[in-house]
Length: 286
Image (cartoon, rainbow, N blue to C red; front, top):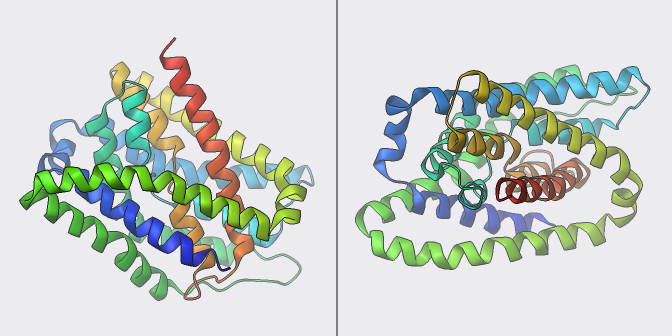
């Protein structure tokens, strides 16, 4: 079973659900409170890919090399927008939920353009044993527009004109998303069990270091700029929680990479991300 048939509807529903939670004032937040919004976007869109690439280079110095598929997969996760589940995590951590929603929305739109640019550079830079992989940028742009921008826009319009209906739909979708992701991970695990077990130690360690490094840098930056406690908590979560479903969709899509090995880092990232951020939420409640 191709995971694309599971992740496509999941990603579409997640983006539609994000749109259902958006209000016009969410887009005005960048004018009212530019500092936390800009810090969050810099952390997600610039800092995370830089740290991911730097980590790969440092590991290669110590002869800790991944296959070309895993390098692409790691960078693909790092270039993805924030995950919609970050809004729930921000609420649980008593963070700034409005800031979380704004960052998720803006990053989903901005990465439409930054993801192809960064990944095109990665494609040109990564070559192992003469093997290189081509990424059709046009197909990537079209797929992301259809699967991300359109569902977000539709959800936003529904919420704008039918807010009560939007809330009811949101209450249903937020209960469906997690079981859907669990199903995706389960199917993917059984299809690639041996590879995941073999690579889990190295990829798990890499993803853990990546998450801790980026969230730590985000927290330090927020502290340096004297942001509020709620804003700092939200930035830690937003910078640490990427849209793994989008990374898996791009990896498995017949229109782009059509390679399930590239999706394995995203699967492991999703697992480590949830474990680390759940622990962080627990710490905030102490």
